Length: 266
Image (tube, rainbow, N blue to C red):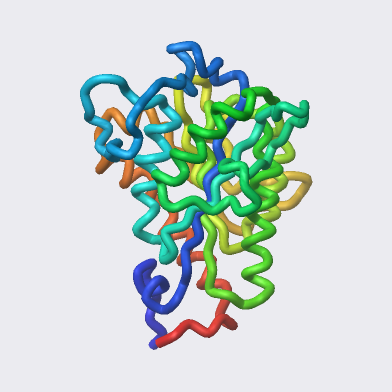
């Protein structure tokens, strides 16, 4: 009798979880010098910031809270402690607009855990102008390429892409197409909605009601989880953890169940 493996079984048998974060640098979030902005920039000792977010005094902005809390939930599943962090929708001083740039400004996007991503985000906020439009498809395509490489090489790697956004997406059709194409890869996408915008499009991408489809192509599996951060965070870190991890374990199981050729250690 063949045993059905659990999420923990797969981790114990050598599956490596890789974390990728993408931060929305578009103008719809509000300018960083505006206190009402989701990217509001202020002096803050981020080294002392804890995931509980119940500190007195000045509060981190919505992106900083989401980076730390969601990152802290996912971090225990990373064997390396590394998060590859990117931004999208930003404009550089040379006039270039990018929908997939290394958040830390270096050639290597790797950051040391959630606090490393926070440091990179704070630095980028000072060096990259918020611009637009809001394009998801490029960062999804780039992460899918990493997952595709792992799949073609038979590596036991699984990728989780964390997209933190205000939800005002402008390339819905292209994003659906990229998700459908990536649905057979070792990849999960967690979209974290900050602020109080209309998240209808994000719920469509989640695909819980029915699998995403476009031009006659249907997603092989549901790989997207949407987390409305503001409403969930008000219920505390346990609620954030539960909502973030609600679908990832089953998505990992559903992927590796279709890959019997992979040699999992016993």
